[in-house]
Amino acid sequence: MDKNMNYGDDYKMIPASSINSGQGIEVLPDLYCYTVQIVNIVLAGDPNTGDFVLIDAGMPESAEDIIGVVESRFGEGSKPKAIILTHGHFDHVGAIIELIERWQVPVYAHPAELPYLKGEMSYPEPDTTVEGGMVAKMSKLFPNEPVQLGENVHTLPEDGSVPHLPEFRWIHTPGHSPGHVSLFREKDGALIAGDAFVTVRQEYLYEVLTQEQEISGPPRYLTTDWVAAKQSVQTLQQLNPTVAITGHGVPMVGEALQNNLKMLADKFDDMAKPDYGKYVN
Image 1 (cartoon, rainbow, N blue to C red):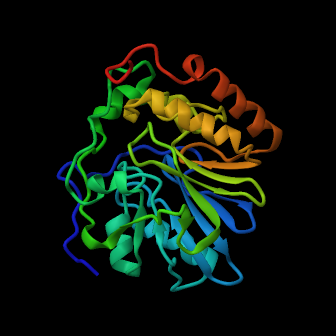
Image 2 (image 1 turned 90 degrees about the vertical axis):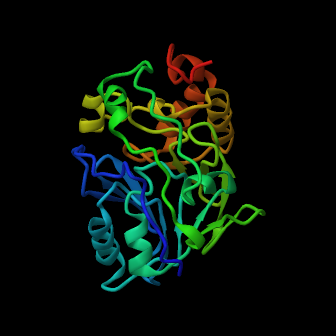
Image 3 (image 1 turned 45 degrees about the vertical axis):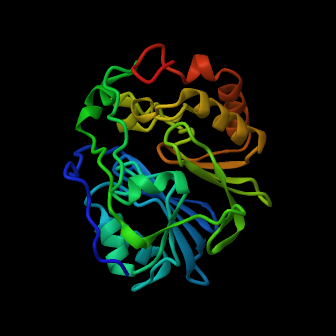
């Protein structure tokens, strides 16, 4: 294990939580969604076998919380086979170094995301000017410098397979970040969408705190390519998922998911793309 890991100089805890923080939902017998403050992690695997993968790594300083929910679901001393990152924004890699040090497991991400995970490149600064509410205005406080995971992070297989999740395939869904990926399982239509789309209006503080369910495009303050973001939503809608766990918000299922995702794909420019902001074309 490469021990030369570090967070960016702007790494810090963000004091924001929703009413769902600390709560988990068994969406399917082998898919468990858990909310860490304002973001979701996913435990993918059967508790009866103990074989599982962690998808995303929560908020800064949340390692003990994540370890606790892992051991509650899979047993004391349990650890995942790997950590899969949908992308490298601060709220999806917040505890990644502590978890690697604890579990000594590999991390996988899209190759386009690796510069932000190997300390080589900072993400563009959050857009505080983008159309939206208080969270968008507060986004200047969010860390955007890269983490340095060294040789602990690996590229996802080129064939679309997901390590240790043989029934899933990863799909490149850029827009919110260059190497953003979503995971899909054909047999039951299960989708782990990351921030390609979410089920809460993440720019608005009241909605974030209350977690009122509403399908929405990717969080505006960190999305830099709205053309790619639209194409990614349309790609995911064409899969006709029956269950979606997103990076923010409550999981959505059935007709509510399919109808709302189709509406988002058809009316993306009206529903998701902001009217103004420094990354808006």
